[in-house]
Image (cartoon, rainbow, N blue to C red; front, side):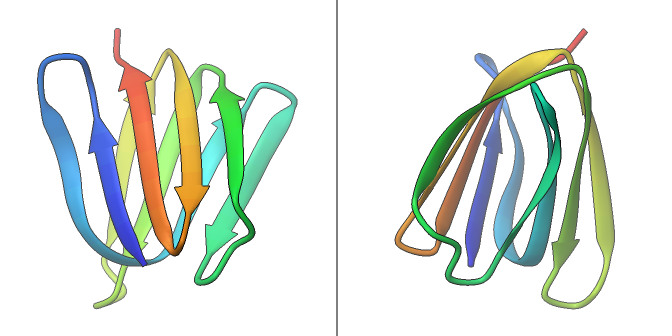
Length: 80
């Protein structure tokens, strides 16, 4: 699946990924290939991305939103 992680001023990540784990406001959840469409708010925590090579990437956030649609994940965040 294609993943984009964006702040208001920069792009933190763009690439193909196996999994994305995000800090939802009521707890963490994981997005995998062909996930159902969803829009959710995010709380303070860490976004974990496992790319298609198996490499792990982590991004600390203070809040944001995630949108999943047609195997594309858009994560819009603020960082402290």
